[in-house]
Length: 591
Image (cartoon, rainbow, N blue to C red; front, side, top):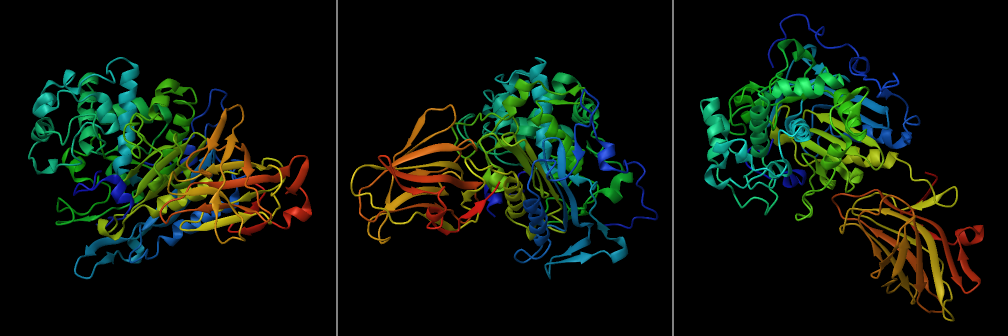
């Protein structure tokens, strides 16, 4: 959901009853892998549990991912970020990490006066399990978007068609030029949120959407809004003649075997559902008490639990199945829910006019504020207000699910997106970078608010042209985190940038006249050359500097060499030369 007071998603990133006897588990499959293990056309599982090595991942960062997540069960800084979470990470067809931590149900109420949670007795608290079901909140928007793209495939909806061509009343209040694409990319001009729950009937809630005026002309700005996906729901239900929950079941969850994904879960599921908030005014729009087994979002609740922007419940394994389906071009086993070219539209930026707000059809792209070091121009995902996130990285064929109940017992206890970022950083770190030329390469590390340097010994470049060459790999938070090649002719008192040129395999040469590299380089090794200044005692170094917020995957350097004509002044391949390198913050890695 959009924040109940209209805060933007990027700013958010910067900042029970008695169970009544025996617990009912029968309506949920007993084993998550067995419950939703769709097969490929050859009969083999499309998704399976396996080791980090089987997934092509490094085990150390996955262990650290869990340790980092567990740290957020403690005050961070004052309150826990969540009562518990389920973590799932994988690559290819292997889920290498599927770990529950903390509690699914811990608090029965929130004490506003003391700012503390009132816990259930220990025998009524419920720990997280691999198959715990969560209110996905705004991750629900992805399902609505997939359903819309399906209808675009089938010709029932046109991407550039005005919404009013399907819903004439939508065109009121200056919205006649809003298109389906505007809804899917949050460029319609809708404000973030309005309290639909204050309207007494469903029909009056819909009329409020139709009567809502825009905050700005469509297509001129990015503004994340729940109203976009609510409007898209109305379009889908109109053109198909089916309710959104029926569309979800018939078009996505049944074909993919996602048996734990639905709107309005039945009461028998409640013991397996993570509780959310003690919803009371003024922090909630409605006085509902502990929300557990029902949708948390007030507008979705008032719409009967079925809404385009929120309301879907699911578990980590089901979301992994969805992730694998999209990474495989829309197919899972013998079932296809989208054509590959349609999936490509969901991973393609339509918001090039709004840098920093990259967006495919439904999916957010390249958002370091929750994707962390997994973020690339094609990394797609979404978060949910309740503490959920799904991230897909096509460049490494990896996927991450973080499901937390971070509004339990109250939304004010958590801020920002630190647990999501930490998990994404570690999964990105788990994807190995193989050295370009030898057994090891120099790695800058991924620390935030840090400076790491890798310096060659002083060299005499005073006569003739000296050239530095090496292999370079970099992926950093654009502009905020920078890799610099620089030199000093006075023993390190002053430093000047050294321009260099890089060339990726099969690509054209790219000049770096400021001696810097930042952002996305394709996560491939580049050949680098640079002419060095003339000086009798020139020191050349790499300097990698990060800000305090987010980081990319970092930088790697391999095969450093300095030549003057046919003479080698420095060659990292020679042990004596390699021993003279001075590394601060950089380390040798095998990948």
